[in-house]
Amino acid sequence: MRGDTRDDRMVLSWGAVTSGFFEALGTSLESGRRFRVEDERAVVPNAILSDSAARFIFRDDSVLGQSMGWAVERMGLTRETTVLGVVGDMKYRGLAADRDASIYVPWSQRPMGMSYLVVRSSGDPAALVPTLRRLIARLDPTLPLPEVRTLEDHVADSIAGRRLQLVPTVAVAALALAVSMVGLFGALGRAVTERRHELSIRAAVGASPRRLVRLVAAGSLAIATAGLLAGLGAAAAAGRGLASLLYGVSPYDPLTFFGVALLVMGGALCATLVPARRVARLDPVIALKGD
Image (cartoon, rainbow, N blue to C red; front, side, top):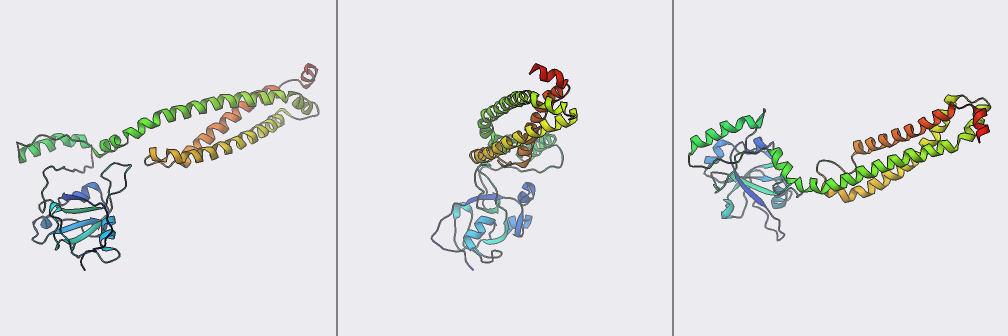
């Protein structure tokens, strides 16, 4: 079956690659097979499609072994180009961009003026740089020595702008958290002090210091829990606005929410226990006379 000739349009990226390209990048193989060395010398032109490109061109039809049905000379595609396999979509325009629908042909089928050498290593990539430079110089001494960068470097560069945008946001959030903790200590400490008369009466009628501390802590933690739930709800709503600045982390990351909740509740407990223990140690008679 020839490729679909529908009127709708889709932007397709393309690349000329050698055998081993997909293995080096760890690209998933959805169906069929990847390029082999013999494909670079094949008489019949062939190609590999990304998942999105395969679904767009052939709809729900079987892709493997089908011919494209149309030609794009610049891409090295002819009407007889045979589809060998389907691989997962990849991102070429930055991490914030959508995954590209792509068509890949053997490099020998359509050599490109500028190419990139992709190397996969199980050890330190930096240790391979001298060896790679020597190999390139041996193959062609006239070639300029390329800049060698790791994939992690490319990823870091692609999100550098978003990281910079997050700096003031994180700073304001940290300041707000610090101010809230100071306010929490002050408010709960004052609330305990204002209950000194009540606690003294309870102590006078037989309540133990431990019971008084538990009583105060329970009340303060209930207040802190209500405030925490309201704050987490507001944070979840605000997280939608930060989603575009994040990569690899959800704005509703449970670990972050749990960490902040633990910090706030720990602060509330400390803010309550210190004045509560001090009040519980007072002589109730002296405390009542003082009031």
